[in-house]
Image (cartoon, rainbow, N blue to C red; front, side, top):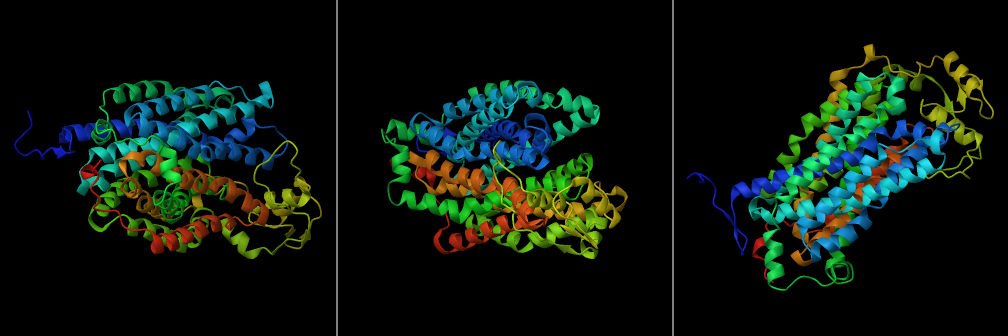
Length: 530
């Protein structure tokens, strides 16, 4: 029996939803989505490590770009998953669609844990890895739209931003969970053990998580808004056509992509994943301290998803999202230079005191690497020295071609501080503050986005229409960020060069969103007529 002080049931036009049921919907949807993000981001965290496991040895740059390429493949296919599962969700229902997606994601992740490496099966290893990443991407493409739509259609109109912001926490919580599991595995095991088979434990752990998530979701009812639409016989017979080939829905899909989700995607991946890779690869901080810094920033920053979600119920979604994009674009260069200053001051001093010039004409820009890809001496030199913040002239020593031992010796002679950051010189407090600031940007752009997208489209095509721009924005613009930024750094020999990508995309989003998108707060989903 409910207490006298319990809030009134939500009227959906078909049946009343008690607050207890709304809470169950939020919890069940969020738990399952956390699991999906955990699975998806295990690879992202281990991508630099997987370069030596699943890709051919002999060229560090090619292996790293190959690993990031497989990482990106999972993101590139997400919009196709949005189309496939979005259509099913709009035709069959929300609940059963994301039961399918969570199963596909779980099985694919578990299989990665059993996949032999390059030394065992050769080029079949990266091929099979990419296939499993594609399956993960397809599943995730259908998961998010289903969970966000399901929660939104159960929530009251005046609290939809807050209710759906719980779904928004799941990506960060999933990443944090993956970070913790991988970190524990690496700490408690010898390095050789972890490299040999220990990393697989994190993937095997998906089995109990999958069972729990499926069990919880089986207990849920279908969305009442969808049920009312189904009863009225008003479902779309062709959600893809109605979403992308009918005006004005197709206009809102394009505006949602370029005016909201593209900028949101690059801010999300810069503030969390690129910051992680930047500390590990360019600032040479060891993985334990890197995981601790990133993990703490995620713990401190995660509640702000709820803060900005609730705030969007009061002042609107659009302005919060665009403000986060704009502030991020303005401050990324000082923030990342600040990380260098506080994490590896010796490297910063070396950068400032060493003459840097590049004299070459055969440099090329590489993104995806194939067995036929050829790296010129200039490519190898810029990559090797770009990670250290220097180029082909080191102090008074001029080097021709690429000979790594000679480059290493020249670096040492010029006073290079080494390939590991001196942890005694790290300003932990300031480094953590900078990382928290970047996570706050993430919560600004991501906290209100689910409510914004749900409210932008009608019930008949909501799952399909919101999923595609979301997964292009996050999967293509955002998910490609580590790969593109790494390639830009390698091509330019400048560790900050990759920041231009999220900055430009964020600015484009601010301009388009400001000029062409309308505010969605106040849209009454449950009162929609069919």
